[in-house]
Amino acid sequence: MNKKGHVLNAVLLSIGLGYILEPATELSAVPETLWTIVAITVPVTLGAMVPDIDTAFGTHRKTLHNLPLLIGFVAFPFYFGNLEYVWIGVLTHYVLDMAGSRRGIALFYPLLSTEYDLPTGVPVSSRYATIVTVLVTGVELAVAAAIVFDVPQWGLEVGRQTLGI
Image 1 (tube, one colour):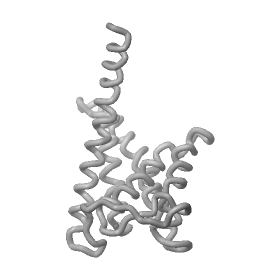
Image 2 (tube, rainbow, N blue to C red):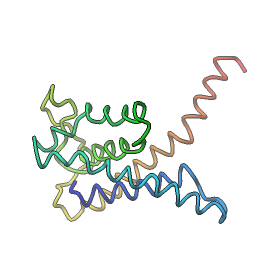
Image 3 (tube, one colour):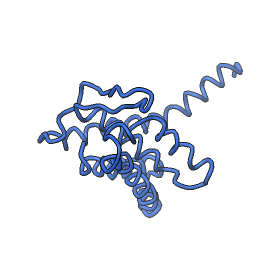
Image 4 (tube, rainbow, N blue to C red):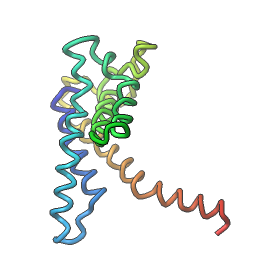
């Protein structure tokens, strides 16, 4: 996808994640939900732009479109205590490049230059690129909601079964 698509994905995803993490079920909860959305939007959007820095140096979709970079951004908050949501932007950039466009990314670069993709994408210049971006974002939000709401319940059930309660 192009920069517009990555920014659109990051902003829509941040709005959805903000609501998933801090749902406003009452009018008095709206300010907290909006605060969460803003707190997530800035780092996620910045993270979504990071991989495309390789258009200025290196090889695009290889140099900064790989798992070592993502691992670095996942590990960063553990060591430095900030940039907690940047890795989400980097990850969703990868997902959008793999699922939303025809050309994949070199996940295992510099070890392998093979580009991996999914058969769901369209050319970056396609008139359907924005629609595909929104659809991919919807799938990302569904996965995030499942992780936030279902995985803890599933883990609780497994724990109960293991303990026999």
